[in-house]
Length: 121
Image (cartoon, rainbow, N blue to C red; front, side, top):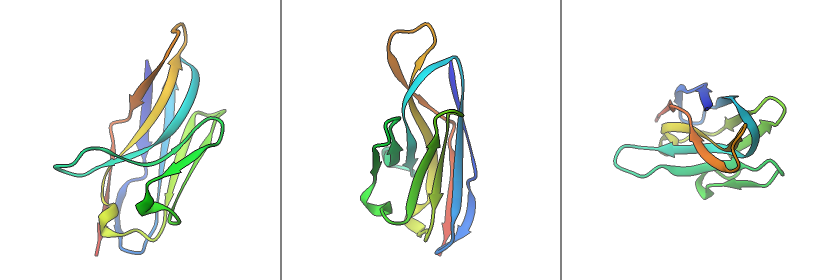
């Protein structure tokens, strides 16, 4: 199994910063994309930022210029630095990975449990 664990969520004032971290563990053979999604009540989970193993980045338009995703391929970790936070950035942030387990032939999507980000105005 592949287990993702997030940390770093919390309450911050608008304009402030937070850094989310995620570590993947388990029987990982290879990992392609790692990233972050956000979900608010009543809405679908949406992409915030994703980074492939080859270095290709993709950000939601709403966070470009404010959020930065990074990863350490050797440690199977990914971080999301969030600056200039806005109330609309609030939600549950989920770590995501597309990984191949040892002994398996294909890749699958994995999710963390989520971490709450609250931004006060």
